Image (cartoon, rainbow, N blue to C red; front, side):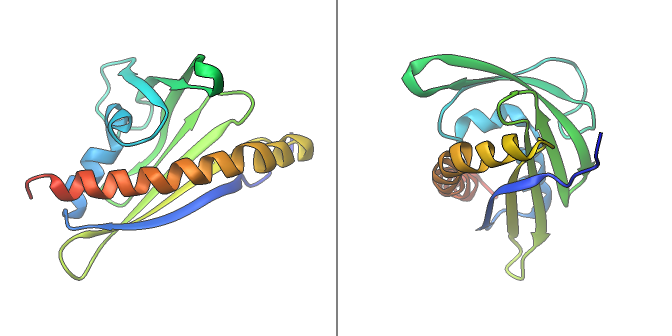
Length: 157
């Protein structure tokens, strides 16, 4: 199999007044995802591993178009607290990879960079991911970043 770099589908930045350690703790606990990402019905831990640790697994249930529910297994594959973490999902049509990069901001808060990629190596599947899922993910991610920064900024700090 060829070693092909994942194809980026979305790239967003945001800022919160919360300190980087608090933001990392919140984001790396994927169970919080259902509180800010549109279309996520539920997220449940599948094991006793610590949130944010490599290998931590979750079951994420998404509301698909038409109301159908789709279960996706999500695993933390990289974690560098409090600066960066990455998850990957087993949803075959997309093979999603989500990355958050966090940096301390001059105001004591946190600057966030958030990316979604597809891990497909087939040119056809990459194009389908970009053309079909890209616009959906971008719309959802824009709303999600607004939800996320609002939620974090309302937390006691």
